[in-house]
Length: 156
Image 1 (tube, rainbow, N blue to C red):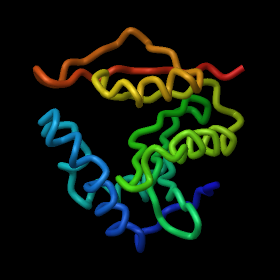
Image 2 (tube, one colour):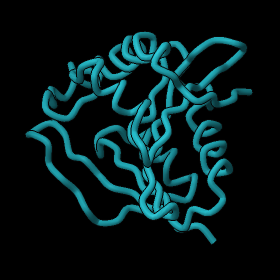
Image 3 (cartoon, rainbow, N blue to C red):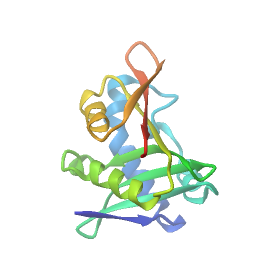
Image 4 (tube, rainbow, N blue to C red):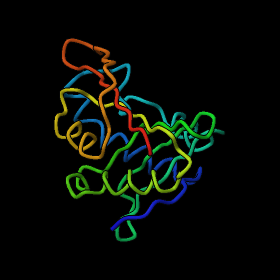
């Protein structure tokens, strides 16, 4: 079981290091240097923490920081998750699904949720699809190795 806590500026370095660890294998595999969060600076983490129409939440399991989920909203009803990441040793344990469910429950006014994933990461795409996210039809090739795929979930 996990819980979410709002990130603060004091969490920035730990979140930055975790983000780099989580996304580095994908950066190495797909070499998407312009878009991969492992290639971002710590300033981007601070921007997420302080964004006026967003919330950067730490994912805590057994008292330990294991990941984060960044949520942005527009008009307080259209929500987007970007990024969501877990420490390499915390992956495959159901934490991403739990974090997404907790995030959705935190904002019951949401009409839609959106997120993007790498098309080539089939397990991640399957997770999102099992959770009710549907491909929008928008795909953006990042390079000859990776394609960004967009998903949306309409809340009832």
